View 1 (spheres, rainbow, N blue to C red):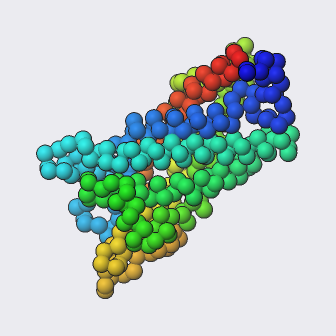
View 2: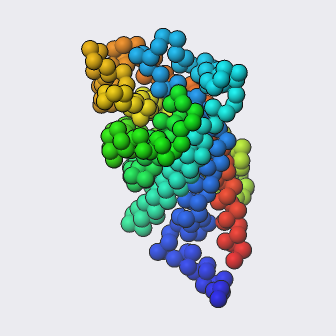
View 3: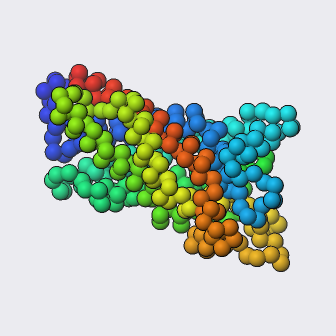
Length: 329
């Protein structure tokens, strides 16, 4: 039987569930998962372009494209040479699932950590605490999402357009065993700051914007679609620029393949490929200067800011709808 409205209201406002007033922790996770899936599927061609641009290295063929437009053109003509949009969607299902799981689990842990923090410490969460909670939430979902990320990156950077997720998974396991599914994990020592910075900026500025709206006599506890989109653009730009060299190193590590028992690009008689993030950063800077650390940042910013802005816009609308439905109980 359905409990009376008075019981539901007391349950939602109880100290055991401090974040259940307007949207529950599960609502946060579900709305983030759905919006992440939509954003990833919608903007997947940009995802392919930015990953291929980041995977280009100084050891590649001199004619290999590395800027966004050149990469997009090479992808378009990568089939039989006649030109097709199909290569832009290789691996779209895996990427959309990865985004849905990653965003859902991140917000699940992030919201749960915030609720626990507020239960122990009354008052607002400071910027430093928000960053720490965001980093913890990022690490919490990596055991499940990093293998999907490795599979997606290998599909996107492979010259073959006929790879299935299962065949890539099998290849990764045969190359390095279980460790092959966690290539690039070292980068997350810094990359865990990316979503932490992004959502901290978003939440802090959102709180300021809503407080100003209330002072001016406005109503509502969610941003408009335009406000969420614009704020998402700003938050993603700040976080992307801050950690981009580590993003590029992660993609380079994940895109490497073994050929004849050796790492691609590490043939006999050639200089050993750097295998750690600090080594890779030093090597890229030594070979090509500061610009090499930010190769592919154009497509990354284009895809990243649009994806985040779209995801947060959809997420705000889902949360608003759920909040109205809960209030009507």
